[in-house]
Length: 148
Image (tube, rainbow, N blue to C red):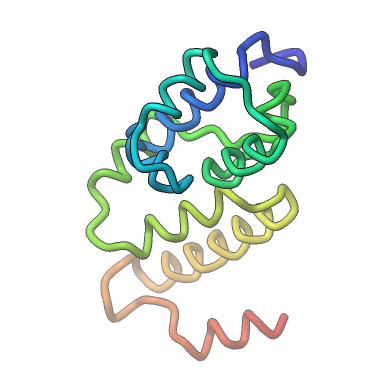
């Protein structure tokens, strides 16, 4: 989206974000405490209005700001690329998925800090010869970095 505010409806933004996260309507319903996907379907199709409390619940469940859901305000939403969606399906354990999901809920400054830290770890690992087990960043180095 360019130019600030989107012409999409709240329901369309909810659906778009749900799909970006790889969630079914049923999975989102469960995250929100609903028994069936009917409410999600109605909201996405614009057949049901949302109270401010429900908008907050949806925003939290989808890892976006209330502002993004209401008006599509630029800079308040983390876009998940098709490549990330494919990677997410192939993750071997929950660590990568957990990191990714938590990162989608961070504000801009916190996300930049996480990015800088991951970049630091990656560069240290590459300096040591790559991703094999003998050359990974040690816990001691991580502890030293945390003190910085």
